Image (cartoon, rainbow over all chains, first blue to last red; front, side, top):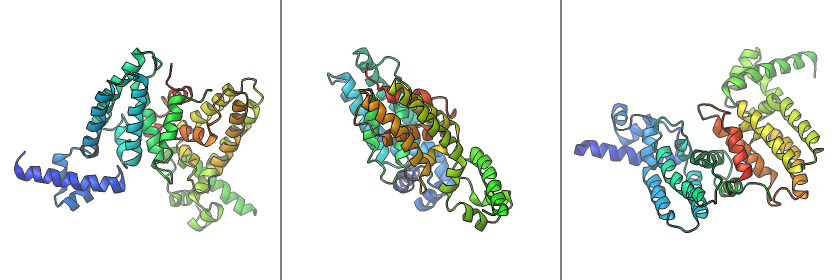
Length: 176
Length: 176
């Protein structure tokens, strides 16, 4: 990337990070371009879609969650390691506007979803191999649960407050 | 209600049922008033808020779910009866646009939420008394799970398809 293109990219991304944190995933791309002092065409050259922009906004944190999964794969209790990671993901998703939407598999550019599927899939496979988690549980289902709970949290008066409790309930089940 | 007011009420409600099924909870109230051939003031006289209108739209079905809960309370396996009811609620919510939103406790007029809390709370209390469900599980949490899963289903390509599987996973937990 040329120096001026790189500067535009970074300026757009910085504005996007602030704006998404305030307005969520439905943020106006035109408003971001305007505030970054570039035209819509420039924004679209760097970010082909809303999903691509959201992916960039969340990329560093999703990469950190992937790294955390690698570290947790060394823990002796494989099922507990999986639960720890899912709770960390839930805590981030429910405290970060726009993040749950970009975890949906239906996101056009679903790189966030792909990275998280990869990271969580390793932990789940390990927990299943160790016999701690039922074999029919799929990582897509676990991510869907975290996404659903975080997404609903965005619509409640105190987002985040109940997310961890609901996630723990879903992972433990209701039976005595 | 006078006969003409009653006719207006019924016309508005009939239009609202069709429009919410097509457009979901974010439906335009003005469009409903226009299509029903009444002014906005008339609509607001009958339905003081969007939530009140949604409540009316879903009322018959929520009443049917309440009646189903009463019938299920006679089943010998109290935990199974609770699960049957939650799955029936999930099937309805995930196949009915706008319904998950009106199940949120944050809905201004949360009559749907209140009716479902009452109906499900009876089944949960019975299941807990019989020792089948952990005592710390609250009906608000179970409704929040069903709502979250249904709400996320509205944003996936094939809404409804995965809802029941995710709900069963959440009720059973992941442990072997």
